[in-house]
Amino acid sequence: MARSQSLEVQEKKELVSKEEKTVPARYYVPNSDIYETEDALTVVMEVPGVEKKDIDVHLENDVLRVEGRIDFGKYEGLEPLYTEYNVGHFARTFTLSSKIDQQQISAQLKDGVITLTLKKAHEAAPRRIAID
Amino acid sequence: MALLFSDPVDALLQFQQALDAFRTSGWLGSSPSGSGAYPPLNVFRKGDDLVVIAEVPGIRKSDLQIQVKGHTIRIAGRKSVEYGETAGLHRRERLAGNFDRAITVPVEIDADSVKAECRDGVLALYLPRAERDKPKTIAIG
Image 1 (cartoon, rainbow over the protein chains, first blue to last red):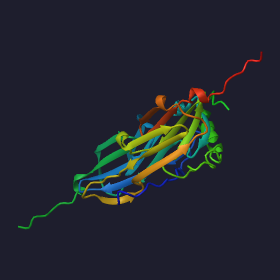
Image 2: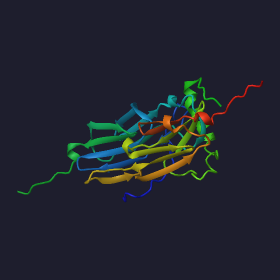
Image 3: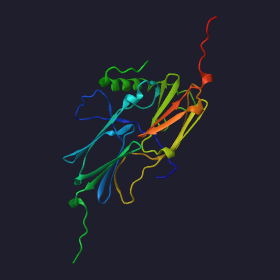
Image 4: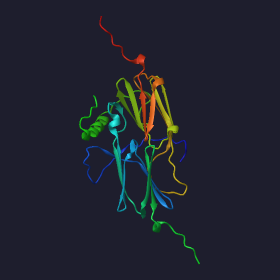
């Protein structure tokens, strides 16, 4: 991608979930990148305003679920005058196809971006077969 | 309208509805700055002062540039998204690029005491209203 390209605004997508929430608040779907290298699958999600302690990462039966809650107490005492986006918690679920080593998942949070590194299980990694 | 939250369960929804109600406001509409440029902003009032909040996930502090003069605030910077050399991409939703946005607010800002904070991908600018711009109360003699 060219360096000079100007950044466009991405409208926040509200989460349409199959399961219903008991919390009366809106959830948003974080913009995500997924890429794969030889030994790992990496999921990168944008969750601005979410602190480290408010992130849940859950992997069960090949379903990866990430939820990030914002602390809207920071907005207390602020009176909106003009708004262009809404704030809310984030949640997104992915079904993983390749075999993931459930013991080796690491997560990092930096500048409002979560990076999940899911190491592939040994049998799922490509193997080079030597010919005798 | 004061945002005083009594019930912590309903509070977030009330706040979201309050934000939604203002999304159609044409507050910046007639100024040359307009809207629609990156980053999307929310402007709040806190007493006499303004607070501008923007979501800038994945942008380093060092890649953000904030300038304030008089009634105008400029937010410029660059967002980069990097992958490893050998990575195969399955999904790409995060955008990268440059941005430069200036907004004009209806009150004059005391540029020397502006505070900027960027934490967890949220940029907050605390813009104190200039002393000389504040209304004077006239006592009736």
